[in-house]
Image 1 (cartoon, rainbow, N blue to C red):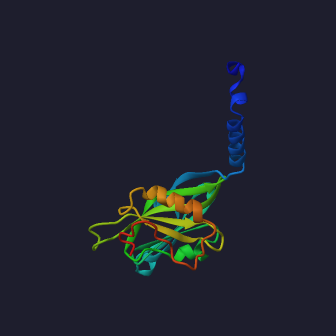
Image 2: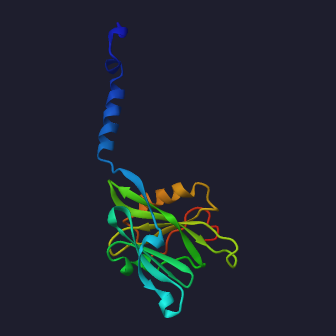
Image 3: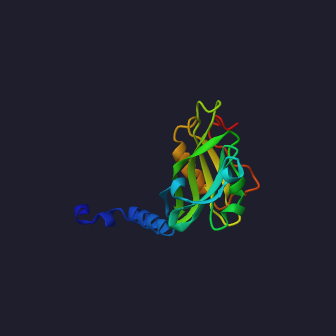
Length: 191
């Protein structure tokens, strides 16, 4: 007699669980990544410190869906900020204490297609420029509160890429820019 019953008739509790899971995921946010490049030679140069006899400058680069990426360099340190008011955001004044450069690949974390954070690899100088470190910096994208929310030493933490995504996904949009960026995992060079 049991052979004639359908799977659903035999296991109604499994159907209820499957329907509950499907219903809860239908309202969940979709978190994805998109990637753009920061290629200063193709960006619009806003300032050139060379004109003033110093090093540095600033560039406006295109980001995901037209979001402005502001890249500045001063005293051999990079600064990266985002959005229409990027120069006035807290991120425009944040950098690492060591001399540093940035990678060209920029990861954008998206909630339902809307950018909420970026992840960018920075290369701090460790000893007079002969060796470099590797730090993933997570920046939240929130008008008036675009700031670095996390720094992960990629050489001291296996799985640093996933750590940075998890941090972006859980903290972007709620981080208080008055606090210093969080440093999860092994601190490495991020003392």
